[in-house]
Length: 106
Image 1: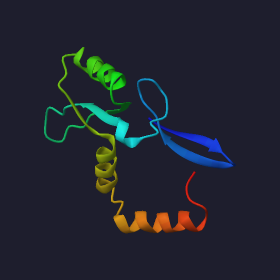
Image 2: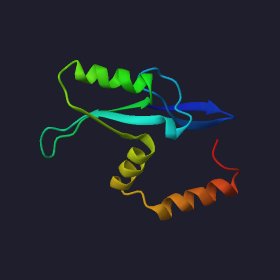
Image 3: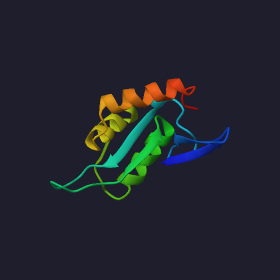
Image 4: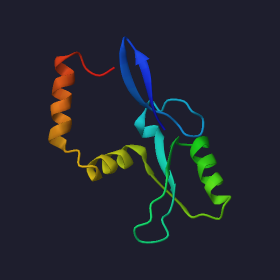
């Protein structure tokens, strides 16, 4: 899940585990888990989790309803989602340049 944290008078975006609720502070330790779409054009909700026990629990919950699950590395999932939303590498680089100018993101 996406959350925001108040820090030093700023709003800091975080990605938190939908199973345990805590911050996924290393994107390499996260996964996006979902029910596999059954039909062309069908969409499904995505559960963002820590790899390991949280990932296993998320898949177990989906399978309890006889659903076929899939998953993707969280970093790759986020890159694909941002790309599909039209965020370009140039826009990301421009944001990084602005962040560097003002002390970087929190």
